Length: 289
Image (cartoon, rainbow, N blue to C red; front, side, top):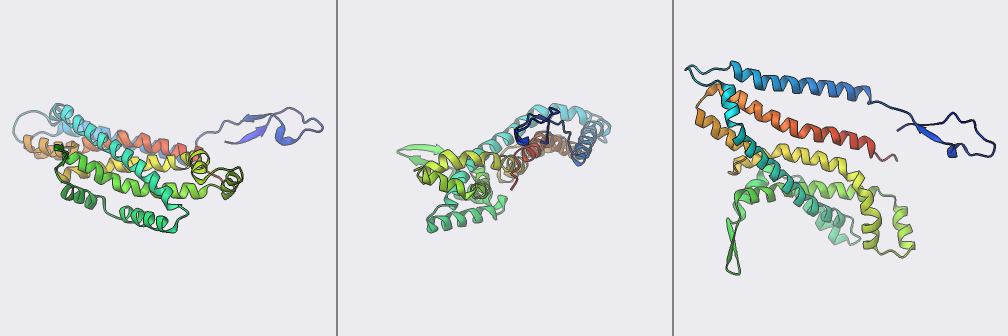
């Protein structure tokens, strides 16, 4: 944010930097305003297409309109979409916890630890998400027995584990970059004050990485949410699987485009605010070197 000196005349002996300051109102840059207008226009057109197209789309035989069918299936599809959101939240939580730990290990003073953490990060970061999902579905048993108690592993739990692995890798890279961006003088100052390395990380370094990681973390969550329809391929009843079931149950070819466009609007309305907030946080927490 731009600052300027107040209109108070300078007093002899006062430093300019100590004079009262006031904030200058500053609007969004022109390119951001144009982007918001363009995005809002796309959203309006998409919603109009999702609502108007089904209203005029009729089957060859008399029956319900496509719009009425969409409204009838909306509660079922909403449950499936909520399942997608739940999978994204759980995967993000698990991946974040594991990624933070893995990122800290990447800056460990022990070279073998750094190398192992780097290999794990690069392996899962550069692996296709769908392949990881298939591996989790095929390799993790449907249930395990612990002290005579059988613990089931349904498909959606395996999907959560499969999606949390690439999230872990990306978070590891974000944390490594954020920790290395902290000036080394802070490490030296903490050491001179008698802080151990663990205390320096917990009390000085890691709190400063939150602002640096937060925008990237939110962007990663939006990408993860848009990737959750992949779980339908491995047998999880998410919104995409329920959409295919609805199309099969209705047997209407004209419902194909309206129904998938309807689901597309749901993902857009959920992910776009996250993307917009991410851009604002990037501007707010930008680190000037």
